[in-house]
Image 1 (cartoon, rainbow over the protein chains, first blue to last red):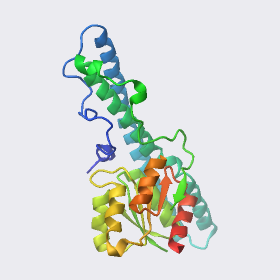
Image 2: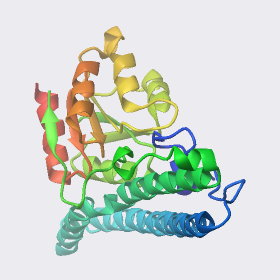
Image 3: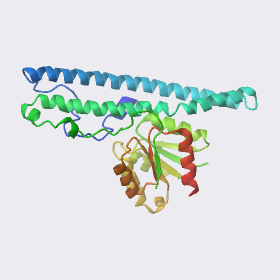
Image 4: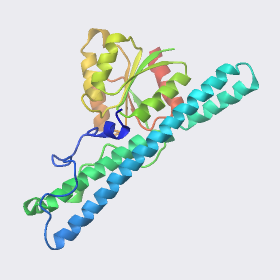
Length: 160
Length: 121
């Protein structure tokens, strides 16, 4: 079965041609001062890769439990139709509906982490290449990721 | 009640969209990307399409352009639901022929209202 993690691979447009090489380690690690920076970048990328897996696992588990809960509440509503229990079940469903905005955290946070990871991979590979290192763009030149939101408040709606 | 095609490569987002729209009495058909959406449209008639923008194989804007070129989908409401919030992207959506641009995360009540609004146009 296809995992949620695999579904996210190659999902977003990558800002650099070198951004999606699959591993963080450079083929030619630099010597001297550059090696320390290179090691730190690789370590940071490794942490983000673990974070991505944690988000995928936690988000997938939450989504499954959300689905199970929804199905159970639906069954209770049908079996107890016309009774106070059915009304309580509907109140539960309303509560669940209220959680759907926050439940979208996984999609947004995984996109942000994937973008940061691709930037770190690019830096790690360029640090392994002296010519690439000299050509590294300044931070302000790095394109922003596909997620600009800084909170989980509902987004805007434009109808054309 | 409307038949809505929900297109997103994120399983969790498809689940949230489906749960929200089904709770309002709508029927929801799910697709994992633009190409899958086109496949689903071969066997199903829908009243509204709600699609993500950034997806593998075929993204939301490409899907909108492809469907707008088809006689049977020229008037079909197509809403983009995405994390992309820049004015430039919204303008691209408008030019492609999208009916609206919704930025994630969505609020369930507002999403249901938007579906009702575009259905009644």
